[in-house]
Image (cartoon, one colour):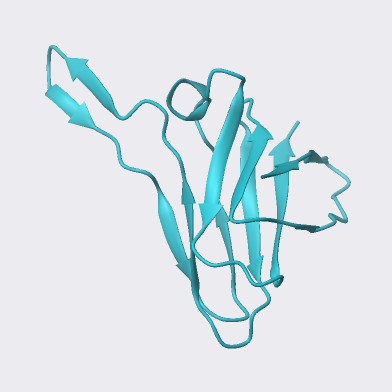
Length: 116
């Protein structure tokens, strides 16, 4: 499992650096982070899915609510920006947000961006 470090977007901008990732990945989540995923495979589309740790909530007004894991299909040579992730729904017991890629072939890169 790859642990990614967040890179801060400031007023002057950010020249971010991608990190190679695994099938399963995590990052410290403060609720302001986004995942920028790059599929460098020229032949295969892939699915990125973020794990929701809390998937059901009981509401007096709306009844039982269910939250699914957000996911995006990323075309070959494509990219996607996904997030932010509310702490209450996405953080595991160690404060990490976890995400997976359906198939890894060495052509998967991501950067975790956050707004200051």
